[in-house]
Image 1 (cartoon, rainbow, N blue to C red):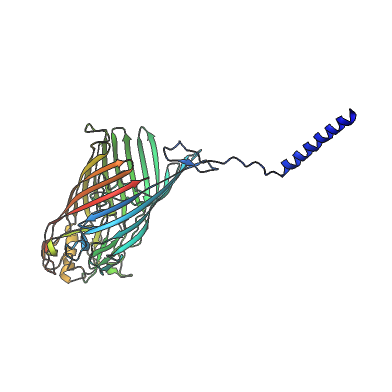
Image 2 (image 1 turned 60 degrees about the vertical axis):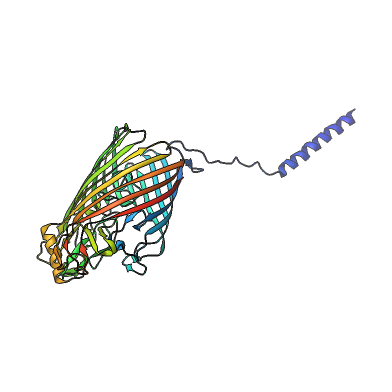
Length: 494
């Protein structure tokens, strides 16, 4: 019995030892996979970055635009040198764009820390100008691709630091209800402005902001024509003793100073904004050491109103803004739009022009910087017919005005035969006035067959009322002119 018991106990001990040895040879159990978790703190589409308390959202859109009888993508009317209305000009332009944005947010003891980045990749074909014609911005016509950084900013404890929409602008910027980028009459910096801003929230939808914003830019004047202009400021024309135009801007040393008050509630939104804009000229005659005009200050003010929950239907809205500028014309005409609006008649036999600028100065003794005044209004009514169909009716009106002293300088330059004489005010122009009026009206119809996929068709009519009287030196008659522009778009948002 004792022998049998010893054998049984020994066998059991051997089995336990063997089992332990085999278990020691097995790999350790893998740690649980850390799956991406939904972050519901900031709305749909946010997820926690694994291993952190930061939430991230990826989004964007893919868009295909085709514009007819246009000078550029997004239905730019045939204006400036691009719109000569000749058989040698392209009558449609196509653009494909991929937009990608990244939004991150982290809750801290100071509030939410947010970063936002938006980048676009573009391919555009068929510039309206004649092939082989170049200007200071590079070759025009043919194909081009490009990358654009629209927004790149940090928000923390009420501060916005980086490239974002100006605090001067309304939330709809230049798009009260339209697709086109070229509905003027107010600020349109949809591609963003570098800034250092602070926004205070007072509750019940009331807020106020103050901002220091980029006022620098590069402008090349060639033959009196705006061949290139940054979004950040309009031209400042200098005129030398021979009647030649030159880039009158000095280096920027003071940012634009912006203030804003906004009320945003269920019925809609009301906003008032103002900006102080420093005009710092270079030198008389464009030559260092010749002295310079004293600095001047321009300003602009805008008021915007949005009405929601209208009796016409769920989701309907009216967006409207009015803007006045004195020496700060970019806030009325410019931004993503050109500063000079010149629409040609058939085969270029007539021309209606409006020249926008911050100001003009001539040689020493002609009175320093003569600021340009401009004002505009624009708006849209947006209506939803049903869950799949919607439309907008939109329009704008803009005025640009030059003082008597500024007009006298331009007329004198034309009489001297300077480099802009054939374009602005040659001797054959009997009433020299580079200002004028611009009217625009249009409509867009949208179809959304499934969520986040929209097809739209837009029509825009732009009309220039020139204040010039007479004939340019090339025989073209100064005359009011208008043009139709059409655009179709397919857009998928994700």
